[in-house]
Image 1: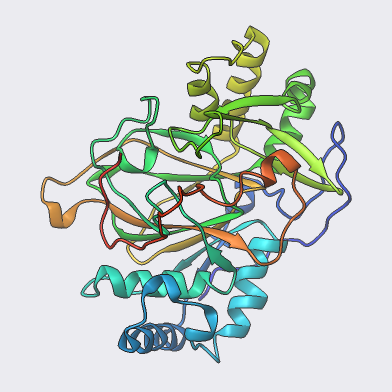
Image 2: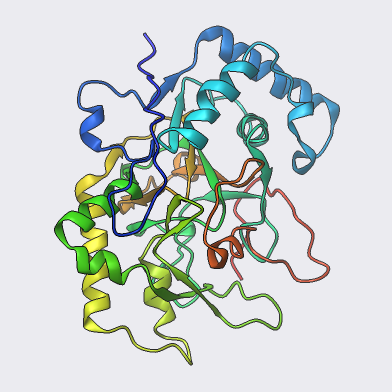
Length: 356
């Protein structure tokens, strides 16, 4: 039996300082009886998806050129658009698909599946200055606490955060030996809890905070951006994470030091995220779709397998949505992925590339 049930579609125009009523305002308690965020694919749906992927692979067209008109799923398309993607755009803001086989299929074949399904949401964005449209979440010895550190190439704990895109997708190919639990939280629910329990902190996070670009600095621009954590635009709520990018911006020249009150507000935000979050244990073949504007995600530290062929491995896409949610202008400017230097072309490496 498929446990999936769509969330509510009740939404009122949002106003900061008042409780937010939005379909994305779910609680981890909503899933105590059943994992209704999880869509388990039927055998017929799996067969059609894999056939579409195999047909695309046989064309010899590059992965970066895969679009929805090249990923033919005539029976599943209605469900994908009206159930799965609608839940991301107009419902809870996230969904997990389960049931796809990955064992015995190449990285390219699995990436085609993920990309093909994501292409019905929008187009893919560069995730680093090398132009990677497809990124590999693997431990390459990276350090999230370094000035240019990126969490995806480390085994570190990652605090609750949002990515620099409208939405993202993760596909699990292999899990680690232990740890690496994935957490998702509704930033709507976190805001409402903070407004109720710590209203002065909620107000403080409406102001602009300095965030490090993590070394991904476009030519001629400063190494930071300024964005609010909480904002409302045209009646729509939006939240950003408040973890490592704000912390690392403190090391940059020209960035004022956070006050104790600001630090306390950020710590409160992270604490509430942990209290209200949903724990999801990855299974190989799982694919997530998450709307960054209303949901944050985090990961616990993990221990990997010593054998290279068994190491934890997820594929990640940053998605530029066709259907946009109104967001604060300072955030909208940062939602087009990493800006590439002239002469750098988008690419889709089939393994992790060295971080420079």
